[in-house]
Length: 288
Picture 1 (tube, rainbow, N blue to C red):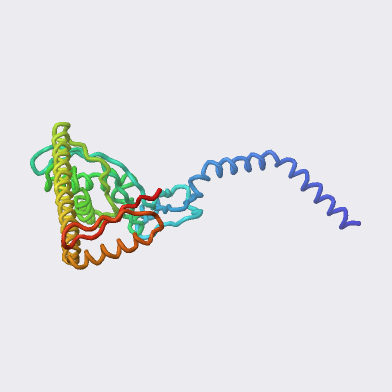
Picture 2: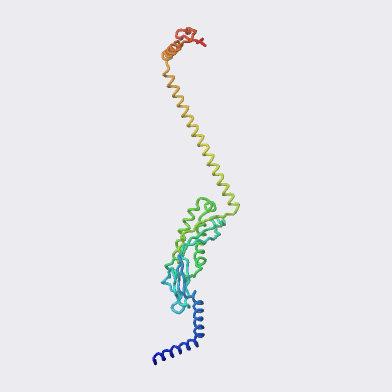
């Protein structure tokens, strides 16, 4: 009974102490919950698909340049900072004014396909930052476009040299990949010339097409003339062959056979004796 009494006393004492400290415990739990809620987004970082993170340690060396953090949940100290980058290929559009070889101003609309080099993402973040497109890509694209356009005149840029210009442009921009960013391609989507120059180029192209159509028509007529000549030569050769084979004896023989066949018909006939020495008799059918 002594042990049971002591146990009951201890339980009663614990309950009394717990009842006295419940308000303090509730306040402590609420403070902990509020602190976690406030710091959750700073401590638990979610890196999505196609993204990578760069960690900045406030008290341990700053930006971590030799480690990049991949997809998933990353836990950090609340005083550190994780910057998330999109490392997929992205497409941005921009316009550039450039001078041609002859000093004419043209406007080019281009689409730039690029992405950061994730292997040096920490260095990119430390040296340039998140606005790397405006800091690196855009100036390099503009400089390359102006350098390339300066080698061509307006007509070459506006016409079929466009593909060659794009190839030259992409070769020029390969050097940008050495500066933390991979530029996959730069596509010229639109070329805008001064209205007078554009009309002149279009008129020239139209005249060239008309000239080509006229030459095609002439060539077609020449081929038709050749065809008709070949046809006429064939007809002449055929007639010459037939005439050479129709001798007087053959014609007389065929005439006799035709007269013989006609005489076999049951209808009544009138026979006209042939004219001249070599004439054949003529049979006139009087039957109804």
